[in-house]
Length: 423
Image 1 (tube, rainbow, N blue to C red):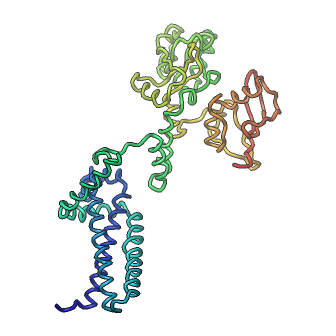
Image 2 (cartoon, helix red, strand yellow; image 1 turned 180 degrees about the vertical axis):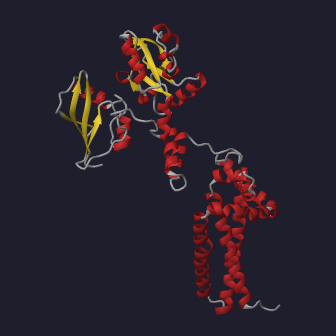
């Protein structure tokens, strides 16, 4: 029998190393591929994605054919290197040792590390093509893969580590899904990412976090002189006004101001006609999650609701626009004198209204006010002092220096916040 030429043995070794690299690349790329992206592409009719998903749904069989091929090729390469070493240096033991080291180095560099780095880096693109190659290989070697998996599955059952069925979809918790969105910063535009991040937060915040506090609600008191009522109706910046007698404790209903554009021109327009235009008030229990309230608004065809505590006292008002602005950011026109933007001045301070929500301050100024107590800066200051502070007093709240600039009646109207040194 004629000896095989050394050149042929060398070419065969290169082919075996390339085949081993293919199997290593396939294993890493398939397991690191984004199954959500593959599922989306498969639903769009992409054949490669469909084949890749079919393989991933049978992970044991896919890994079986990959590892079977990889181990066979590596064993053949090791044997071939020994043959080449004997051809070159004879039967000396040192020659076999050098051959073993050489094949180990070649497999590590060319068949393991490099292909796996490539597979992990370009997993999503490679998975679409690997499905076409691995599917026929699995069919060809299915009997051997099935036989090997008999022992592997038996060992897993013995260790009580049997995997779930391959068709069980991976379920993500809201927190995991939120992390997935935030980590996809390079794939999602910043505005879209901000909206999605706000959407995930709707279940963790309550209507009290978004409502307009009772003291800031513009009411239409029909016990006032009628001329004053008409002037307020003509100059109000709100499309809906709570109508009451004396205070919100005597709430009669909600008035859509646009419905009175015509009747206001009528000289005979009076209190009775105004009351006929009222809609019954809609009440929201304090502590309701904002996401649930959004669904309640839709089911009840409401756009405004009054937040009440366990005793039925009105705490504030929440509108559909408040929830939408929490999702997409401020989009309505600000009322005169009430700016929505907050920023640090050149001296590291910011003028802030006492009625500002602590959540807004944390988000817009990068602060860390506690959110498990009062909802507004005024409430947090009053809770600290247990009294109405005087103008010019400064305090530190959770390490943030706050100066009281102006107080009126029973609340803090204006403050100056100083940027913390570590922010």
